[in-house]
Image 1 (cartoon, rainbow, N blue to C red):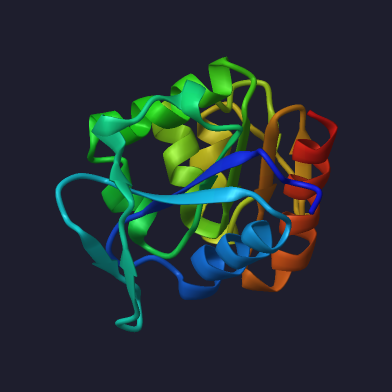
Image 2: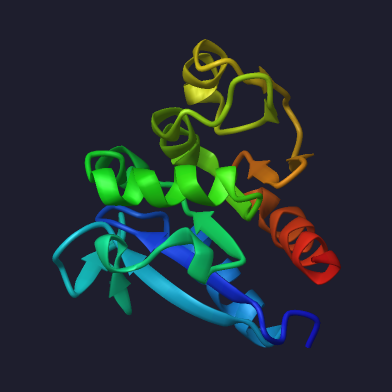
Length: 174
């Protein structure tokens, strides 16, 4: 129970990638963390790319980054919808500025771009959004997980074991 007492927000919007939301969600609960699903705005649940629902615990405009030890952004096409909600972008930006763990996998790099937190940072993502991250100032790497201080990024569902391990390690030290 390495994460007992830690609070983690997992962000949700329609078209999320199932594995990238549910694997971290349950892995962190298994380690004793309190995990909250934070919705982009208004809906009580969101549907994955393949129709699997997730129920929201709280909306982004009802929480502050200071309430969490980490923010996890799953991929899929959800990040493109998430970044349309100023409260959700602000949550990610504030968490990064406060030194909280900010973790993004696959297309979740879009949220990091919109939050303006990539300039001069090492990061990875799904290859198709590599140019977006580079244009935002990231030093893009092709690796299963890239850790740059409080920023943890991975490329795709296959990278979930390394992604979750890196987040757990970062939070267990804090």
